[in-house]
Length: 139
Image (tube, rainbow, N blue to C red; front, side, top):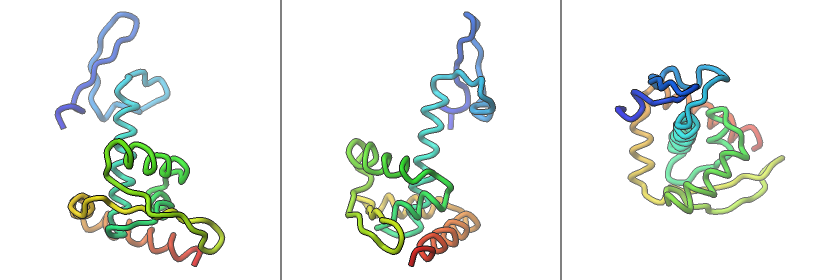
């Protein structure tokens, strides 16, 4: 991705260019774009994990499958991904077992299929296994 290849950072009046692989490499990262890029990557990973469940998905299972915080995942799904970008739609929240589950659906099946097909066979299998474990945990 050309946009990620090189980002500009200012430190003490000097301008340096950093490659995308260097972003987030330490706590001294002061590049404004790094937080945005990190957020986009987190959301892309969450949506890819959701895609293995099909057109409708359980948000908590998708978040757990990729090791994300459930509250943060729900905030993204109910917030910008639903209201601004209109990629997903909330379907409901119910209690199943020990904890509540939040169900969403992809607004366009094409988006779900694209995300699912963009996963390689190993990653798809890993996400499907982690999702099954998470859904079965409270059943």
